[in-house]
Amino acid sequence: MPPVPPIAIIAESEKWFDASKLPLFVIAIVVLGVVVLLWLMSRRGSSFTPRQIPGLKAVEDAIGRATEMARPVLYTPGWGGDIQRPTTIASMNILSQVAEKTAQYDCTLIYPTHDPVIQSVAQEVVSESYARSGFADRYRQEDVRYVSSSQFGYAAAVEGIITRTQPAAIFLLGTFEAESLILAETGNTVGAIQIAGTDSTIQLAFFIVACDYTLIGEELFVASGYLSGDKAILASVRAQDMLKIALAAFLLIAMVWVTFAPNSGWWKF
Amino acid sequence: MSRRVAQIVCAVFGVLMFLLFFSGHPTAKAITLAITTQYWQVIAAFALIVGAVSFVRVNVKAIQRRQDIPFRAIGLLGMISMPVLAIGWGIGGSSPFLWVFENIQAPMQSTVFALLAFFVASASLRGFRARSIPAAILLVSAVVMLLSRSWFESTTSSFLLTASDWLRNYPSMAARRAILIGIGLGSLTTSLRLIVGIERTWLGGSR
Image (cartoon, rainbow over all chains, first blue to last red; front, side):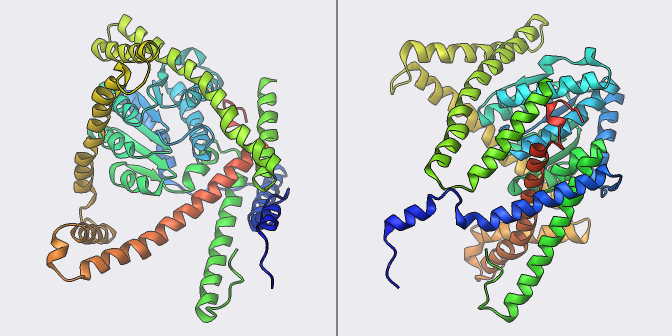
């Protein structure tokens, strides 16, 4: 077979549809199909019961505890993410539910962030949640605040806020980097009940050690459905679970297959 | 109405970015680059003004209420002085701006980062208590890892190094990959929920 000239390779990779991404495209379409199918089923009356997640069951208890102790709730999305990340969006969805409860209980919610865009979105989310719960007058715009874009400037600022305000409940939900343990340990020293969750596997280890409850992996992304009880979101959570089971089954089959037929490669894509 | 517009914009750009990801055409790449870098920089620049205004307002209000005055004053001083130094004398090699950055800001950042060492020690002390079988396994694994990365390893056989490599490459990697698969699926379904319009809590909770 004659060697392919470089110009032909460039032409192939510059097509409107990059064929090398076909498997990923098929997977995305399958995921979309399953999500939409279960969403339509939920609209026709099918109900999906969410699995129990201890960290999410503890959300209301944590806010209730803060209210009883007359201390604030602190919620921060970490330094590592921006508004483009699905993790930050998932965190916003949980913030909406938390803000609704703090409004009902008349408990102060402090939200420090490192990103002005996140601050603007969070102000809107919290403000709407307070209005939805019927206590728009309890919302204070300065409680959702930008502190610093610098990683350790942000860490120092949040650490300072925790030390000075002594929150009874701390939510560390978003994308965290090296500041994760600094914040979690500071929260621990003030005796706050801490619920954490991140998409960083390295920081998860720190949260598991230092926090009371940790949302691991996809639990962060299902939280809004769990907390709101919204049927459509719960249907998509069920879809996510089904896809995970399918993927695990595929991995098991591929593992057994490659054990008995090491030269086969049908499972590679 | 404004929520509906935001949702339509989200759906249109979501579908557009999804399709552009699967294209290798130079035009598609140029559009992706424009949206993810140039448009984003414009949004971030305007948002920074919002952030700065918020920072000043929060701290000025706190000073008026006589709360934490020294901290607030230093914060405001830093925020005002750095742009003044940069505009007045530039950000070059011998500028006051760079001097402040290298001799004040960088050491302060290093100080906060250094706290991590003590926090790791205190968290480890609490976490590595053999109260149950899983906790005991965690403790043994941690001890093997610690010893294999210390001077002690050089005084014994290569067993510790082999054991720590096995721990990192098999049990730890298997668990990490399982979590990453869950995160990947979660990210994908969250994004699809936003594009399709199932998830609307980001618009302020309208469901």
